Amino acid sequence: MQFKQDGKRQPVPYDMTSPQNLGQHYDVAIAGAGIIGLATALFLRERGLSVVVFDKGEAAYEQSSRNWGWMRTISQDMAELSLALDSRPLWRQWAREGDFGFRPCGLLSVAADAGEWSGLRGWLDQATGRGLDARMAEADEVARLLPQFRRRWAGAVFAPGDAGIEPDQAMNFLESKVRQAGVDIVTGNAVRRIDIRGGTVAGVETETGFVAAGKVVVAAGVWSRWLCATLGIVLPQLRVIASVLRTTPVDGGPDVNLASTRYCLRRRRDGGYTVARRNSSLTHVTPDSLRFMRQYLPNYLRQKQLLRVRMGMDFFRELRLERRFGPGRPNPFEDFRTCDPVPDTETLKETLDHLKEDAPVFRSARIAASWAGTIDVLPDALPVLSPVARYPGLFLATGFSAHGFGIGPAAGRLMADIVTDTAPTASAAPFRLERFHLNGD
Image (cartoon, rainbow, N blue to C red):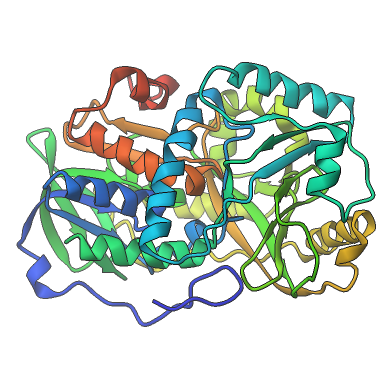
């Protein structure tokens, strides 16, 4: 597979499934070839299961290769913290096997004011005793890590074990590793529906035919909601658009990954920086926004400063779209191969201007490229890693709410444990689908 230097994979002609896939029986079929689908496939294959992964577009073309490239523990929800910590050694192991720009540079999260500092300290207090290496960073340590910056912050937390990764190159490595492990990856072939016979999973119906599988995992990112709808399963998933830029090379810039409300950045192996802003994500009001308002409202009110909400024609486009998906319908996933949203260039320019204002070393930097990704979110910002009680053999691995890349390796391993019924109850419990109480459970 080929990549462009703007954070996205270069589209290539689709490789439709070969005839031998049709009629072949697999232990597990996975819908979605992003980091979660591929990591799940890898760990299932290591357990000796036969696995096929389908994607209606290119593998990892959407959010898995468009994210910031952070492996982070700071500010992770307590339920996800173990996944973040457990992903560290897996990323390090993979970095010994392949070169994808893994850089154990640490992450420094800074607070602009007393309110933000209170939140960071509160998170650190909760995380204490959980095996985390994050600590408060005193002013002299911040100055040592960020000598280029003249701005002063109210406080900071530093996690030296966090890292930076080139996401497009990492996904190229992971796809190759999964194929070498013996997993069949079939791109350009949409899963139209999940076949249920006698109340249990029998396989998947793709756009080129039926493939038998005793278990099916839906790891389709933002498309998971629609695929669940083909079985009448309610997944309260919405979409959020986030924009990112990369700069031209900058000499003498910071090595550490930096998180703040004004800008977030990661030094790239090409000498430039990936730059974004965490409070600039955009969501459009859709029929699902109203349908799931009760579930989303508490979290939105707590974090509304991180999200902009817009009303427009997207409401009616989504209304028309949802009428095309459901039980007994053609479910035309092949008509929607990829999410490729337009980046918010004005906000990105403003973000880079803030960075130049605070750190003169960036004044010569220019925007070399910009892109946007569509993030699958859930009401509590935690993923679903869960069996579906109504249909034995069906599993969901989706809704990572912008946290999926960094925790992807351990999330895939946990998902493999769940599929093989070997997951510790305490590890899997926070991610059960039943927590939303939307499917008669």
